[in-house]
Structures are given as structure tokens and as C-alpha cells.
Length: 217
Image (cartoon, rainbow, N blue to C red; front, side, top):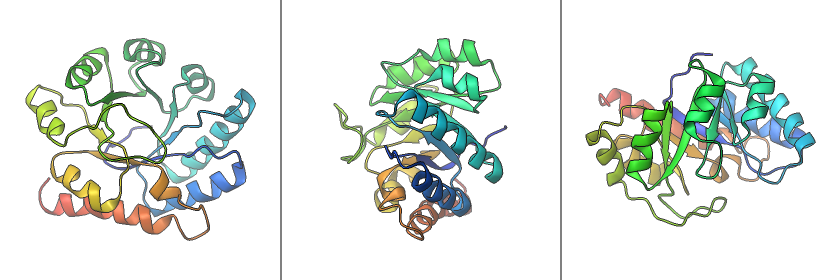
């Protein structure tokens, strides 16, 4: 699936209840999420395969690309749209070699500009910076500054830049204005997971990018 890497990048929470996960994710996709990443650090292999397969089918129905966090073999097994790798996962080069040129390979770069440059050279489709703000889900050793977005462009990083870490529509606005192509979010999107609670958050994020388009960004 060809992907335009711009907009809200939804990352799943560590929920074992697959029905609840699918219901909330379906609402997020219907509301305008541009990309979905399945991330469940504590799942058993069986649960991970079950949830990833169901989410992939859901993404296909909505025409949204589906990314698997960390698990390259699962991405290949399901023929997902790509994989996201962190500092302790398979390398960007290994993922790109395994998946070929047509898949998405995302790379966590934290607050490290050199890591982003290296990831692009190794074949990354996008680079993810963060955390920018305190996160209830992911714990970061560093606090990333908004200036890294301008620094990345100045250093020749041309692939899309994703920002992550405690994102809300309010605090993400300055990062979108600074050049972020995608905002990745977990907690504020899924919230309680109750019906009707997901779409407003998604729509608030997508409005940031609509405003950017109108202003010529």
C-alpha cells in the first residue's frame, strides 16, 4: 500500500482485550488517522499474532497502512505494510534488506540527529524523534528539543519526521509548525477506550495538519 506519511500516527496501547482494542482503533481510523502501529510490549506471541492480524484487516478496510513495532518476522508473516525499529531492535538496514523497497521502515531516533542521518542512509522511510514531553506510556532517557526538526532538515534529512512523547493537540502544534510531518500518539487517542471518546482526539490532531496545509506548510 502506498502511504502518504503525513498526519496523525496512532500507536496502540498494551491492551489484552482484543475486542476493545479493535473498537477503539476502528474509531480512530474512521476519524482520520493516517498510519497505525501495533505496539504491545507485554503480549504473548499468540496474542500478538491474533491482535496484529485483526488490526491489519481493520486497516485494510479503512485504507490505512499498518506497521508492526519491533517484530520483523511478524511483519513478514502478515505481509504488513512495514515495521518500526528502535535502538535495541533489528537495524534499519536489516529491516530494509528483509522487507525490500516497497515497505515502510520507521526508525526511533530519540533526540539524536546523527541516528536520524544514519537511519535515512540505511533506508528508513521516516525518522521518529522524542520524547518531547513527559509520556504516560514510554519512558525516555532524554528530552528532545523542537530545534531538532530544523536541525534534521539542515543536515539533509529529507524523509518524513515523526514526533512522539506525551503528545496532545495543544503541545503538538508548535512541532507541526516547526516541520513535523506526523504526530505519534497513544494515551490521548485511546483514553478510556469508551465508544465515542476516540474520534474527538483524532480530529483535533488532524486539524493541525489541515491548518498547516492551508498555511502552505
